[in-house]
Image 1 (cartoon, rainbow, N blue to C red):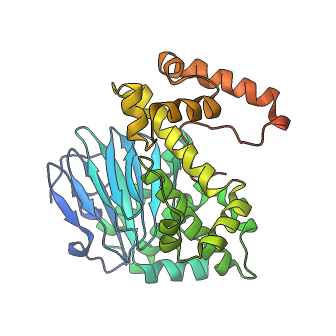
Image 2: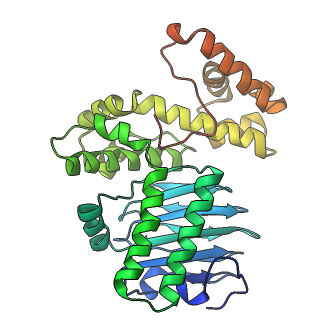
Length: 325
């Protein structure tokens, strides 16, 4: 595959996918155990099950469909998937995203020897972190294109993974709350809980049943409900409502849909139910939020700061970040 995009390394160091092309990760084998991607301008990448992956949107928009649902990526937003997620990334016009996938065996070796892991989740990256990750991605691509020794190429990939791990540092606090005597068990629990949160985000257009999350995580509904609350400080039901309200906020800001259509798109039974829930969570009506989102968020933050001790419900921040409670 050929690309005229010359800002991010040597062409041979990654798979460039654009102009309506679809790249299946199984058709891009790598002797190193990992694969780099650059997706732009209607290009698509499908990652095979069995390979964890990570994606960062640099400009424009991309859509992602996985077993956790459907997501829209905007600039500086990242998303990470577990090995069973099998995501497909589709770049829109003028969109540009970079990413990588890694064989599960290589990831386990890196976790065991370097204590680096890739946790499922979604969030936004600070400009400094974005520049550092982009630089390491280019170095990794350059190491592969230069035909260096395998240990040099793997060292470059470990540095890239270390940068990703650092951007997920805030998960360490959640890891400490997970049950388990060994770190490996705690990481397994947190990874499954993070997939559950991604599932709530990826299905914010409807009500998600506990049985679905139990099947996704291989936990019982009772154990999942108890552990989710202990780790994140909120119930599954409350997290689901927060995700649907966050989706409603995005639609109110960015789409011409009527408020009634927004309520339906976010899985509410009726516009009245949506209006009550929105006002409870955001402290204003949907119409007021649409008229001036920044003012609505600012006033809600002031209300929460003034009545924090009296309110049992955490403030809703939009857009929600799945890597933080």
